[in-house]
Length: 62
Image 1 (cartoon, helix red, strand yellow):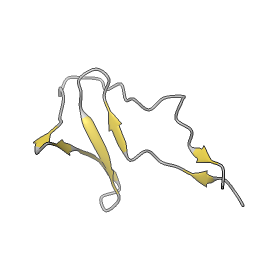
Image 2 (cartoon, rainbow, N blue to C red):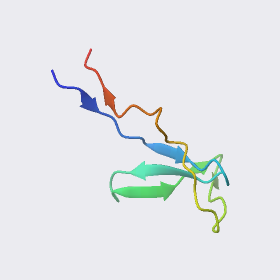
Image 3 (cartoon, rainbow, N blue to C red):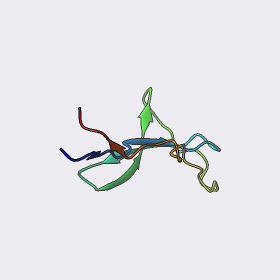
């Protein structure tokens, strides 16, 4: 069996705290809500997402 592709479903900016989740229906990232509050962060931030070289996009089949 071939390795399965994993995609991140949530990401957070390490600079301003913006949090986004992947929306399959819209096929794009949208601002996430946590505790009933949108986590928009700073509109002037050049976001540094917490997805980096440690994220393994392929997982081996069991």
